[in-house]
Image 1 (spheres, rainbow, N blue to C red):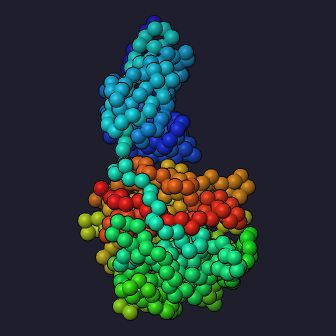
Image 2 (spheres, helix red, strand yellow):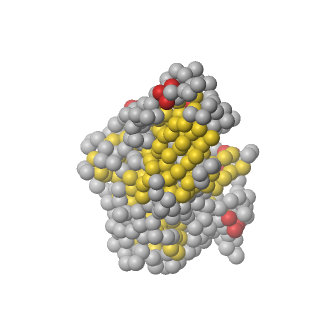
Image 3 (cartoon, one colour):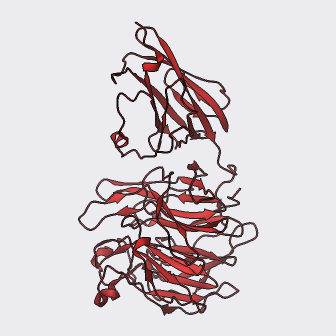
Length: 522
């Protein structure tokens, strides 16, 4: 007995086997996203719901409703020169899966996607769009088919590659900070290897700056006024000819690795905020203190221990925003967001805490960026980890964004429909043109080990602040974490400095390289 088409439920599964694929869709009920760690049952699927068709990758999913013969256009995206594999299951009205199904895969344009007829493996050959058809032969001989539109994504300026900036950092650095202002690239602090005289070892207070040449390369680095403290895991910001240092772990110099565990130094997290003026020739003035960090979670008598580490911070439209971070006194990450109005003399008037502006969860080792689209400003928080000492550590792939009101107040945080491909910590993020870039990073833990990534994903920023689906870009020259990234707003060039490629107690794993990617914004 043949089974009519309208009693079949087809599920098409994408399982990434090489490269990094992403997917998007335009169905009648599309838009639900989830990560590989979420349960399918979270979506309340029922066996009798024969109108459901699911297309699932190992990173993202889209869900459409409608019978195979009448379903709206189903679309997935893969990057150029990457491969994914499709598979199909068919179910009867009771939800029982058919066995011994024969499947034949075909593409209507082999110049865009190459398809293995029997295995369902697809490879992006050239940018474009094609229809891939799955033809199923059931055990009783009946034949049905369904299609999926495959879009091969090519990132903008895909021929652009990372170029050595022409100079290296004066010393290897990781967990440092960088910024660009008025044609100069600045790097400050971090962990550094030792020179022959055992100077500049361990945590450093050094600040260096280099001019940006017309072709995007850098001139020689020069020393600037050192920071008042030896810091890593701090934030370095520039705004209106002033430079700011916020938070970080403070420790004196140490001659040789391995460096001390920062958790054993509970009194030297930096609660200070320093600022200095920036001169037209790129040099900076002497550092001064302004209003220190204050945490609402701590009583007044402990505000001198309100220092933060691995927080994120941005400066925008007259305000500095500090988001999350680790506090040793609390022995946990915080979700606190602090807003500091910048005065005309560069000082911070005070730190304002609005509970409605706090992050959705406690967070550190994340990245944050801010941009203005058509007159509206948006703040983004990307990845990171949550948890406390002795508690469960959660690594995040979510991206949240909040609109900034004209008075500087953050509106409600919203989850982006498009997240990281994988959970990340110690990555970097930057805005170049209308794109949000995420570069490198790692995930894992001290017990099972870490995986380091050279990957770069970029997301188009829509007019309402929402992000488009991720696409790949030219990977970093190394799989980096604890690197620092800065973008030149005048050219959209992206600069990557230093970082680590493995165990940071090993000197050769700490980098002094400087690379840049030019004209990244289309």
